[in-house]
Image (cartoon, rainbow, N blue to C red; front, side, top):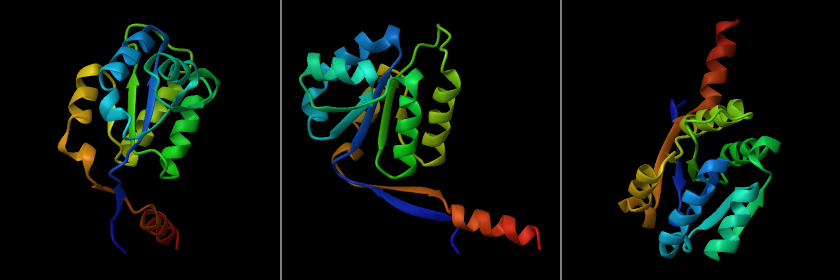
Length: 156
C-alpha cells in the first residue's frame, strides 16, 4: 500500500474565505480587487464574512455558520470531504479569539490535507496569482488507510 494518496485540485477551485472581525474589511477589499480571478471559482465563507463579500463584492458566496458558532469546523469538515481546495483566512494575530482552538484545528486540517492556506494579503496574492490557479494541481496526502493498518499491525 502506498504511503501517499494523490488527489487533484481542479481548474475551478473551491475557495473558503474567512476573516476575523478586525480583518473583514481588508478581506472584502482584497476580494473586490481580485474579483476577476475569483469569479471563475466557487466561493464559500463563514457567517458575516460571506454576507459582506456577497453584498459588497457582488460575488456569489455560499455561507456557513459564523466561526465562533462552528463555521470554522464546517469548513474543516468540507476539506476532509474533499469539497474545499483552498483557504484564505485573514486572521487577526493581535487579538485573542474565543474560538482560537477551532482556528488552530482548521489550520491543522489544511496542512494534513495539503490545502493551500493564506493567512494574510501577501500570501493570498501569491497564491491567487500562481500558475496553478488556472490548472489542475496534484496534491499528496498521507494514506490514512495505511497508517491505520500499521497501527493495527502493531497491536498484533
